[in-house]
Image (cartoon, rainbow, N blue to C red; front, top):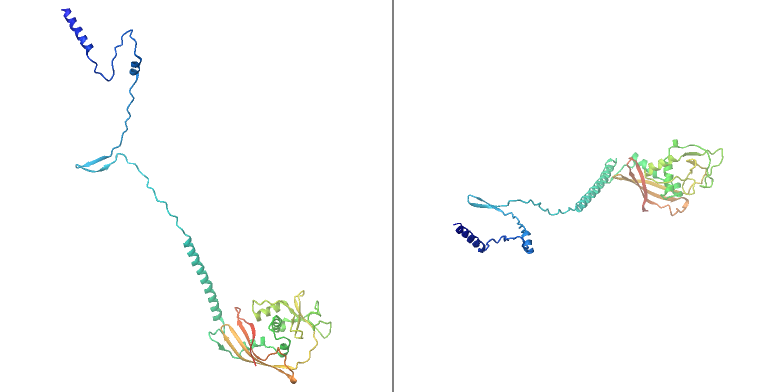
Length: 330
């Protein structure tokens, strides 16, 4: 009986040996003692399979409400910064040019307006500032005062008829009051600087003098604040008219001595015929006629005719002498 069981076990073992190996994952080898190992098989047994790398992908999820998809909702949101367009720089140059032009225009307007206002005020403040030409009374104090400043006699006309600096100095000298002239001396007086005047040491001659600032004051009163006439000798031509020598070292005008000249054989008839005013101006019209005595011929530079003297009211309310103009010959 035991023999039967042994036989069955041997039969099962033989069947299992003859059955093919279906395991493909790893072959099983029977390593018998004292049996050599195949190197290739040993290498294959020791080699592990390489891991498989998989990449996860975020798949948008569709949200379903009441059985209807309402949109795709990404699992992860990525915020992106919006790219702004570059700002265009503003050009202010044209605006600045317009502002500068406007400013210049305003300044020019204000300057012109100021000039117009000053002219208007000067006109309105004039005592005789009529808008239209008007005639003044010949016997009025104003007219007679102005005429006395410019009217000349025959001796003065014979000495000089030109309206130059020498005549202006002489006319300013004529405005001096006696209270401005005082007794003096002949110190530094030149006997050759203004012939025929000298300053001799004579008992019967006492030289007189006045200050140079007195002359400048009279010049401004007669010809205006802007007058520019240097101090110089007061003499008309080479005559004995005037006769004050300017001595700069003393700051004085000193009177010289001149022999008395004979009377002239000419005479002048002068008459103030008309005085007009317009705005700040006053004009005096004078008729002049030169006559020679004893059939003497009148010099050519003494011209008979009509002369006009022009005065203007300045900002100091003083009528200043502007010019003398020859208008018409007889």
